[in-house]
Image 1 (cartoon, each protein chain N blue to C red):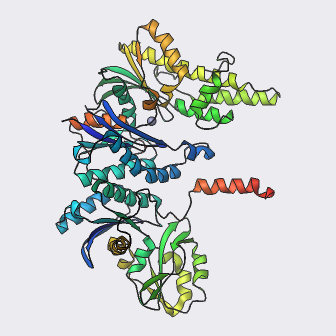
Image 2 (image 1 turned 60 degrees about the horizontal axis):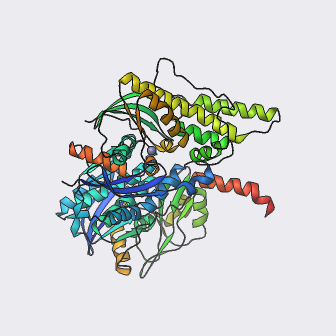
Image 3 (image 1 turned 180 degrees about the vertical axis):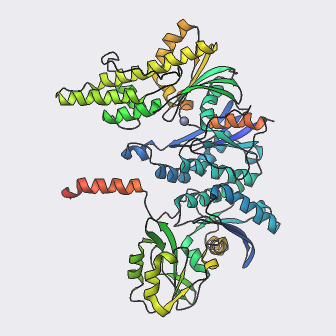
Amino acid sequence: MAGLLLGIETSCDETAAAVVAGGRRILSNIISSQVELHQPFGGVVPELASRKHLENISPIVQEAMKAAGVTWEELDGIAVTRGPGLVGALLVGVTVAKAIAFARRLPLVGVNHLEGHIYSNFLAHPWLEPPFLALVVSGGHTDLLQVLDYGRYRLLGQTRDDAAGEAFDKVARVLGLGYPGGPRIEAVAREGNPEAIAFPRAVVKDAPFAFSFSGVKTAVLNYLNRCRQRGETIAVADVAASFQAAVVEVLVERTLAAAAACGVDRVAVCGGVAANSALRSLFQARSAEAGIEVLYPPPVLCTDNAAMIASVGYYRLQAGHTASLDLNAVASLPLASWG
Amino acid sequence: MLILAVDTATTVASVALVEGERLVAEEVLNIPQRTHSERLLPVMARVLAGAGVEIEEVDGIAVSAGPGSFTGLRIGLGTGKGLAQALDKPLVTVPTLDALAYNYFFPGALVCPLLDAKQGYIYTALYRGEEAGLERLTDYLALTPAELTGLLAGREEPVIFSGDAIGLCGEAVAKTGARAFLVPAASRLPRASSVAFLGRRALEENPGGVPLTVEPLYVRKSAAEINLEKKESDSGGGNG
Ligand SMILES: [Zn+2]
């Protein structure tokens, strides 16, 4: 079979649909961002996200089908994100995907969002095959895992508190940079000195590949409070650059250490923070000396998208893992192996 | 014309199939412990199979649009949108309170459907039976039970109460005295057949149906929007 899958993704604040062939070739990839809707609130408002997804989903699906030049008859299946994410938001995608699958008598595949991010590297690098190491780093996740095969994963470590992207959002807010925090901090940090302030690089006891970012966030808050008490002007660019350097260094060093420990020479970085240029340049500098190849998807595949969901869907469908009509959304869905 | 209708505005999940004036098949599930997401399509599959109808034979989809549970409304309308898009059939939405009032049409009598809106509120609207059918006298409202008492004050007509929130509105019902008629418990549940009959009427008036960007009748804003507006009016109110 050609393996044409329609993917649907509504786990957070992007309404997305895509058509992918054979799990690797993107025929269309439509993403509608809700950033402006949530901006006045300084973060994603779950009820508003759910309302917007339902308003947008049908035109987005229509656009994905039209841009791919694919008819319903030509599809081989529907893949949809069923978790983790905001449950109300997930439910919109799951509901619409199930109705389409029911109406067209197509196989339905429920997909883990995290797994989707990993597979965005298969779309970006068609030659890539497991095994490799994956760093999933976004507003919701900071996970380091071994991809042993399609559908076979070994979790090496994850964040114990805030996700890296979440720390960016929170620090951006206290610096008055607004939402979303990641791109704002990255832009301001370009004008600053990353060595101006020594923010902590947290180590998690007895877990060499785990992360913790609440400490560095608190350190930034304390630093700002001290400056205000002393009446000093705050060098926002230096704070942003130093904070970013602290987060990026931990991500890069721990990932490369994990690769060395596992004897793996290829790392795939993915998720929203994978688009961060400071992260990419530090990976580039450190990976060469370690003899490790680091791969990233292009920015459009770093953000939440449905092409990556359709890619997972293709491999799951090949393995016979389809869902029934009672498929539900799960807010905190753990990444489980199925291969 | 074969209409497939869905109602998931409350804890009840209901699917019905009607052809013309005939109710072909209907299922009503009132199991609050299980989510609509898990139940709705299996219910629909049973209704269609029971009627011996293939989904492709359906001429239009009607969905109970609210007010009701926000998540329930999205599951109903999301299902309707997915079906309408994949089958290339028209979608129509029917206000949930209209559907709940639909079966109680007596000229001269008022109908007052009541739905639990949670947090001390109810959803309601007031209807009067006319020669041509039910006429809606008010907006779709989110009220406290005390405000409902005010809404009904000064009315002379008999009032037929229905819906899952009759128990929350004891005072308003009591003040209506001998003019109050309570619909029996089993008939107070929303039923997709009413949505289907009203949906068919809407489709006759508007054969293309509604655009697939249609939103539910939420009636109430999200808590975040209410808080933001409050903050803005508190800080900006002094200037104008
Ligand atoms: Zn994501």
